[in-house]
Length: 63
Image (tube, rainbow, N blue to C red; front, top):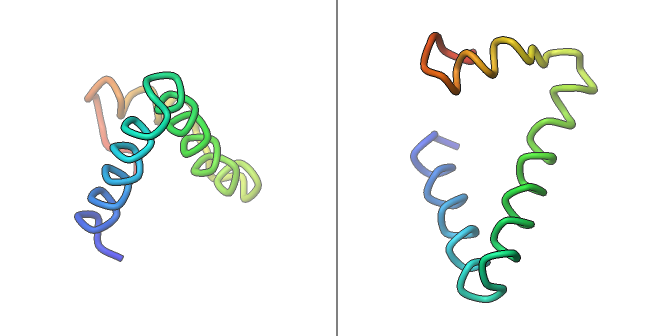
């Protein structure tokens, strides 16, 4: 699946959760999506916290 399609699907899920469950439901869904994305990386040992923080801050890519 391309990054554009993935982003569109994630945006649709978050938009629907915000409309259906309100702000805190939106936050809860977003947290669970983040956990679901991190668990496979942690189980394979491919998660680098420093690289993730640097990517969020725009210092370098996360790949």
